Length: 203
View 1 (cartoon, rainbow, N blue to C red):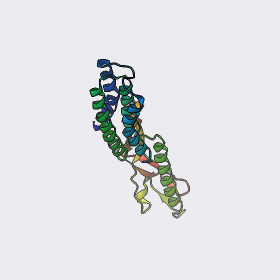
View 2 (view 1 turned 180 degrees about the vertical axis):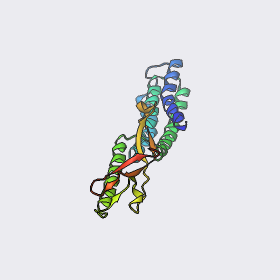
View 3 (view 1 turned 120 degrees about the vertical axis):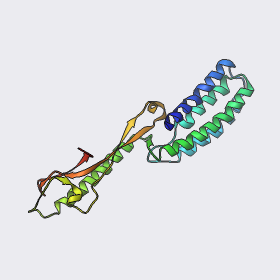
View 4 (view 1 turned 90 degrees about the vertical axis):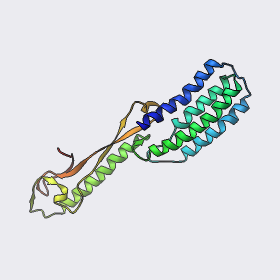
């Protein structure tokens, strides 16, 4: 729910300046230098975001949309009062959205699709390590099918994490991190014949 509000505010930071243009249109009503000075604080926010270098991705739309919105306002809004109001409000919105976007990416969301491959690689490494441990067990014994924890002194539970696109992924870049509970399971039989796999809970 909260992330939907976040995405709506990102869209609003672009749509509101366009609406203001419709009420107070004017082509290049102020010097370009003044517009660039107004854009500078949002650009600083953008540079800071890009320096975050989070594995889950960095906020982009959160400051880019306000930047584009303010550019449109600076070049096309005739009213100076409206321009000044947009200048400071969009800077505040960019700052708040970027901070919130960075926090979102630290919990249940990510804007780097490569993170899905990282999750998969982590699971495969863990699976391979458990398989190696099982192979070290006495080869003359036959083990029943069941959780690996019954064979090894090792926790068997493992949450599989995947990325799922949501309605605003196309412009926010945010994917929801979906966790599916499960456990590592031994297929049963002699050590050399059986194998370890991940299974959903309750399967």
